[in-house]
Length: 257
Image 1 (cartoon, one colour):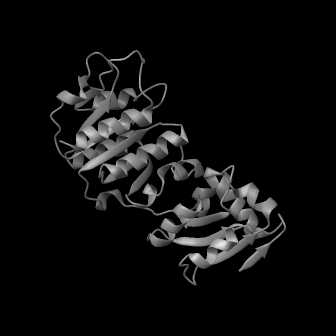
Image 2 (cartoon, one colour):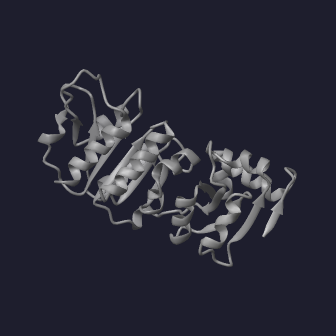
């Protein structure tokens, strides 16, 4: 176990950078997960835990976890731990994880979620969690979307980030070519009156659902590329639904067809 009490320590500096910077996560090919439950799941997954980082509170959990001898344990004093923690009432335990790279050409998929420039970390994390719940095979996060490995996104997935392949930072054209090569039917969400109600769609497999930006919706590229534009009928007075809520409803509806 490494005991760190100084912010000048190189290991601490790396942990801090990964926790706070998307570019540093990409550079180091690492991300963080925080909290007892998700760290337990991370250890049980095949995702690749590199370090377990704890403060004095989290140190009490170490003996309860089945931690491989290959995983380094780092003890930070409480003040340093606060600077890498992303929660208000931290449980004092973080895991540093390898970012798993997937080759999309080698993934056999039937149900795909495409995240198109969704910005809110909570929305992105909830979409991942719902895709997992409704047995989607693949998530594609397009360029311009919130970083999949943002700590707030990871926390909102509640461990679902470990359960299905996520391919990130693809361009629109790259993604469309992949879907076309697999003869995938594309359904884009659209608030236009010309869009089809999700209850009237005859879902064809394999399929992809495109969920767009919170304020701007799906890009014109995907509205034009889609085989069908779909909408959730609203009978109440709300103008529209939250992106994560809308995506979850559509994924559930399509998973039943």
